[in-house]
Length: 223
Image (cartoon, rainbow, N blue to C red):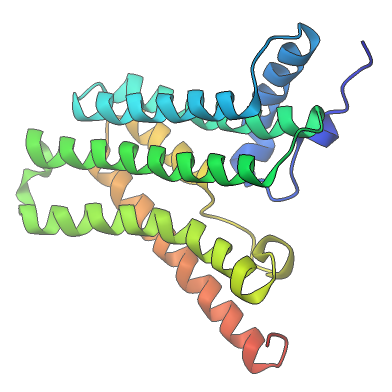
């Protein structure tokens, strides 16, 4: 079998964690699947990554922080395999991209919700915060996580542009980065700090992008 060109499997829109960590593992997994002709489709890989995300959320809620954090990062790595497999085998499709994106959002919601429920229900050293404040933090993390993806999707749908290509400020709150933060936070057993960081980073990114696009519009670079 001909050698697989790994440059075909990577994406220009990769975040820093995907580029320097995840792809080093996921491309090897994809190569094994192709080399040994393992009967699995890109959409099935998306489902596996999604199920790992659901399991991570459940484990966070059950206070298995280290295992949940590790599974979160494994889910993030596996999430790269579906696209790599599709590109390498030339089986990319609009539905595949849509399907993967929706499952990613559901997995993210599960993981952050699991973290949030752990903080609220099980208490701990963070119990000095009232439930009201904890709910605000959790909602901010959930909504911020979704907004990061939403602003990219709306830019393509409404403005016909790719923020990855057009904007000068690099992507610093992509999904791979957010999940890596959750992975590290889980291993270090710091759920509250983790969810606060995800919320802050996500909203900071959204605000920076809105400012950047607004300035481009005022300069006449956008219609």
